Structure formats: C-alpha cells, structure tokens
Amino acid sequence: MKISIGNHVSIGPYAHITAINKIEIGDNVDIGPRCLMTDNSKKPTIETMRMIPRKRPLSSKGPIVIGSYTWIGENVCIMPGVTIGECCVIGANAVVAKSFPDGSIIAGNPAKLISKIQ
Image 1 (cartoon, rainbow, N blue to C red):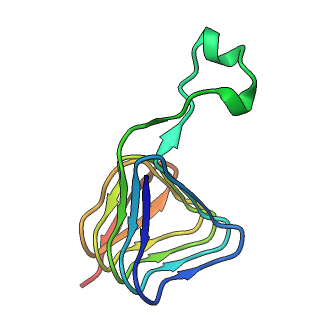
Image 2: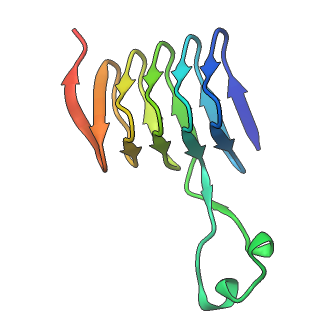
C-alpha cells in the first residue's frame, strides 16, 4: 500500500484518506474539509456480512491519482480507480466515480463535467 502526497498540499480537517493499493496526490493540491478518498471497500456477501465489521476483508478496485494544481471542494468523495487530471476543480459534495482529464470543472452526484478551464 502507498499514499504519496506531493509538495505544498493542503488537506482540510476531518479528511479521510485510506489505501490498500495506492493513492497519489500531486503538487499544489487543495483538499477541502471532510473529503473522502478511498481505493478500497468491503465487498458484501452473505458470509462477510455475518462477520464482525472490523474483520470483513477489504478489496481495491484500483488506485486514485490526483493531478497537480487541483482544487477539491468540501465533502467530496473520490472513489477507487479514479484519475483526476491536472488543474481541475471539484465542486463541494461531488461523488467522483469516474476519471476526468486536465482542466476539468467537475460537480454533482454522480460527478460530471460542468466545463473546462481555459
């Protein structure tokens, strides 16, 4: 497992970053309060649901990569397997379940491309 955080990254209070695979955050990224970035989940089955919660196995659906110069708003959730390009803005409360290219302005649940930075 690896969490890599670049230079001059600001992480707001109560952010939750958890990895069993890899999370890579570029330089000059601003992460708002109460953001969630996780590359893993507990895959529910009848057998695992009957287990003590802390003993349920984790699995990863892929790493998370956040490009440099990106601004992530408050309460954003970034899900496994997502790559965010450089110079992106993610609006507050967005749930990001797919990847977006450089210069994207992203918002919503599920997150979608609102516009491009010129």
